[in-house]
Image (cartoon, rainbow, N blue to C red; front, top):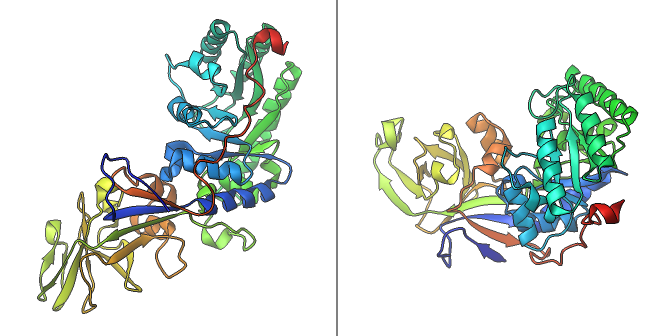
Length: 407
């Protein structure tokens, strides 16, 4: 069991911690790999691996069979390289002035959305003396990043020209599904059709990437027609099935990797009619015991779950009493014996009746993605499982060559 805390002092017995099961991440990726069949798996580890810890989660994902890693911003990719991870990494979100030269030097694949961005990356490649490996993104209907379909032919033409110049290689063409977690949604088929058309445009323009990819977690699990050459699961890597419960397959075996728990800071007996927390939105109905839990919205506990957020204490489900505060919340545990230091579980895999992150999402009116990624830096991370955090990195991807060598 390994402790990690983003603050300078690591308490011997943390008052609040997120226990991360690295074997669950490894096994989830193995399950996703089996669903993908012949497609490669790029495990998405952006946002500190959905708050599970960037480097430990990345190593666990690679141990489970992921061949590549995906991040949003270059700083995340640089952190993976600094940790000695040499597996291929794609970074897909950058603004003008991004350190493309460093990314190319560190063998980081770059997403390209516009001709202007392609120009900047090509210049950086010329300065570096290395070929930049790029993934051209087309907007197939998400209305977010990627080239508009009207702009796509020009981007393909320019990218091919830069390939012939020996400055870039189009390693991938990709897009993103907007409604893959809504089975039967007509936009899914429309987006796949637009993606196929974009691939045809690229092929006619001489651009033939190794990797065509559009599938997120939901599509990896339930839309095999979207797998192409690679899938990009994110939330499912961490054990959350993104589909509504009624649409999930019993053959999909995912295990939530994070358990969030805290130790009670204080207990006290109070009479009936005692108001609790800000705004007095809750009052005790009878003589009871109140327990203070040292987690709040500064740690990622959503204030919108005030009065309804579920917890597990002494083998029973309870709910947040009153409003969630910045650093703490209160639970009403009735006549249950309790003491400072007792354990309260906010969410986990559900093995012992504890709530899951999905339960918290439903209580807060949000999605499990947000519940997980909100968990803040004051919460100590404790890593468990047999998957080593310091596993030897994979061999570097074979694209760290100069333009002359690759030609």
